[in-house]
Length: 459
Ligand code: GLN
Image (cartoon, protein in one colour):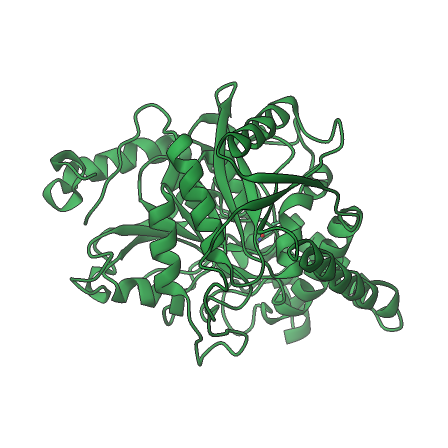
């Protein structure tokens, strides 16, 4: 739907005022400028004139790329990520870069070096993370969609906290050229949007093999036209979900039953290992990927130090935040000489076993349903969930990254004034099944908007 009020090109001033008013409350963008990259977008195409936000760990020529970290403050992106360029070719316009946990490390966006992002539903709460800026911007109606990266849930979890759609494709299906690496065997480009149709359209435009990303693959298409009949529902142990999420999960199950899907309850024994395996692999890869930020080539350079070694040490010490340092240390620890078998290689073996477990289940069902996160949006600071508990809570989202499978977080209900989502996982390359189930559920329960939200359409 598009009315005069919500067409930016006819109403730039009121759009900018709208953005400004919401930004005072939520702080979702690190940079915002609707004119800056307009010249890079085609004037026609399926997304002609549609504004979008891009997480600040993607390169977009015209904007900086800080990854939410002081170590990259003021660094201008020298080129544009393939995913973003494809959307510009389809007519969409980047209006700004969204806030994130530094380098994608976190579940709250509180680990950004630059600003706090609040949840539009309750500004005392986090928008989730690490793509919290993207989710908050979409939920507040500042943009119809935004890009995020998902290494362990960073698109799905904030989408769920903000009441919008959060989509993670099969590993390799969308080019990562121009996306800053966190953990390369887990990272994917994902979409956050207000509707299933928008999510599907954006994904369809972005997917495809890219000569500039040798981990990218050609999408072979769905094997069964995306048909969904049988759904496995993960049994969740008593007490592992908050009351709100438990209630919401039951509502989703009832909705599926009412719609006539065949439901099978399942256990996933490997879930016990998901979090330790994820944090072993993610930190090991992060410690290698972040070695390039040395204060010498680009980005923040410390004034302390008399030789390159000392300058490098103090630049990293002053430029990285605590969470990033913790993860580099952990990664270095699990990779240290003589110990790879004990940690990293063992984690890789469990990872393979997990994928086999999922594949077995998919011989019997079309999709697996599970929660997104054990709680709704939590409060800033460590009062609700401390940083360790936040990591433990990643178990439902990390599984899709470890297995490489596509997953979709869709709005499920509003509980005590906060949105809660539910997650579907499909076999590799079966994104169509995810869109199809989400469309059926959207007809029953569409994404809800918090008061005062308008949907702006075109720039
Ligand atoms: N919460 C996860 C982490 O902190 C998610 C990261 C992500 O997907 N970028 O690692």
